[in-house]
Each structure stands twice: as C-alpha cells, then as structure tokens.
Image (cartoon, rainbow, N blue to C red; front, top):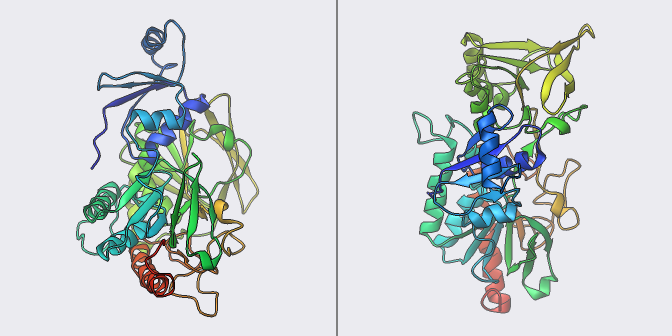
Length: 412
C-alpha cells in the first residue's frame, strides 16, 4: 500500500476549490484532516501565516516538511503526492481503462500470461468498491472485508505480476484505428498517448444525482455521494440518506457510527434493499425510514441549511434541517469519452457481443472489450465484476493470438 504524508486541509464549506481538493483526496483514498476556518478562528491566523498574510483556501499542509500548497490544481496536488502523471512507455500489449475490480482482475490474468499491461485510472484504485466501508458478500471473506483493503490487495497482486498502474489520469478519447493497423490509441487529458493492439474498458459508474434545485450548489458543502469519505464530518449531527436500495441502507448503517440520527428517504412504497439490510435498519435505534418521500430542493446560503421534501401520497411538503445529505439513487456509467468510439445503449452503458463474430466481452469495435459496472447487462456487484474481468481476458487472449498470426508480435 502506498504511504502518504499526514495531510491537513484548511478551507470552508462554501469554497468550490476546497471541495475539489477534498474530492481528489477522497477518490484516491488519501486520508486527511479537515479544518473549517470559519469554525476555528485560530485556523484563519494559521492560513494567513502560511500565505504571507493572505487568506487563501484551500491551504494544504503536509507533515513531511515539504512545501505547503495554496489553491492547488489537481495536477499540482498529484505531483506533490508523487502520483506519476505518465506511464513508463508508449506501447503496451493491453491497455485497461479503469482500475476497479474488473480492470484489476483482467490485469492480473493478462500479466500472468506475459502481456505488458497498463491500467489507467482517473480516481482511486478499486473504484467504488474501494470506497465502500465493508463488503460482506465477496466469497472467501467470512467476516467481510473493508473495501479499501480489498482494493489494496488487488493492486498489490497486480503489481507483483508487473502490471503498471497509472492513476490521477483521465482518458479523454480513444482512437480505434483501422483494423489493418492492429493498434488502438488512448489519449489522456494531459495529452499523453498510449497504444496497444487490445483495449479493455472498465470505467465503472458514478452515483446518479437528483437533479433538483440547489443540488449542484451544495455538493461537498452538505450534499455528498460517499458516506465513507464524508461521514466522519457529521459526528453527533442529523443526517439524511436519499435512496432505499442496498447502497443507501449500507451507507446509512455506516453513518450511524458518527451521526446522531440517520433518516432514509425512499420514493417508493417499500425499501429495495435486501431483507438482511432492511432488518438491520429496522433494528437500529439511530435509523428512521420514510417511504413515498422525495427531495424537491436543497436550500441554504454558502452551505446546506435545509431540504424541502414531499410526501408523494399526499403532496404535502416539509422542510427538514439535516447537517448533511447522502444521495444513493442509482448509477450512471463513466462513458462520456466513448460516445463516438463504441456502441452504447440509451443510458450510456457499453454494449458487448453485438457483432456477428464478437469475442467474449468484445464491443462492436474489433479489439476493444468491456467489463464491469459500465457494461450493459452487468449486475453491479464486486464478485460479478471480477468474473467479467476474467471472462474478458478469454476474448482478449483470442484476439491477441489472431494478432500474432496475422501481423506477427502485437504492436509490430
């Protein structure tokens, strides 16, 4: 596991750059201490001292004795943390976009078969599984396992076989190239280009938003999508969870470790979570469930102050005053960069197996494969993503054998 220095972030809830820096650290599962300078006047003095008399936020302090960062870009923050911005070379046998369970599993299988493999990940290794407090349904862990621990184990295993993992880099586009050329090109937002005869797309998903007034204004300032990342900031406070599926109830139960009260809102007339989770929620003294209820608006000045909710049976509206709201209402695929590259369904998920001679997990573009949560028809479970990563390698192996027969060594 990569060791990072202890980090303190000085900022304010209304500050968008503070929210961006916090999101970057959370995505990479880098622990940090948050100090709200509006709540701690002494911290304002510290910030001014660190910035030559100017009050600049976020101001980020590291305990390794290195330079303090003030209003850093994500690239500057990545460089300060020694997160490498580019891969070691430009050509590989296989490039995998996304370092969740599907991508890491495929990388392990590929590297064991001797393929030079590069994995590119925009956020933290492990995907959503890596930021899950506890995974209880993954075989082999009778007592469950922390999501970050599982992700770290997968990364360590992949790197043991020689997989190169490039983090903090977003893929901006993919050029499939003519099939006769035998190479596909991946371009990152930093302008770097990498080529390989086979690509595997495992970009994963992100939490869906409510798209109601005020939501965008308070993301990171009272509205969140990761209880593991932001739950500790609400110790002893009232919180609201929107969504009664497995994710909503799991994250709500996690919040009870910190919050004084967790209220779950579900728009339907019953919870959609598994019965085991429903039973846990019903038995927990800190949890309350409200059915047939939805959010209409987030309100506040600078930070979240209230939430307007509506009873869908009666139409009656009510204003609630939670300190924080956590939204878990489903998933959208991270596939915007693929719109002109491979076939997507109407929701943006990657379609595989549509061609007459498609290999396992292959898209409509020869040599480009997909697996995991962003693939149309996937079950959005860690165990299933691992299985899809392994299955994709069967198709990739066949494709690589064809490349060798038709063009010699891949990449030539």
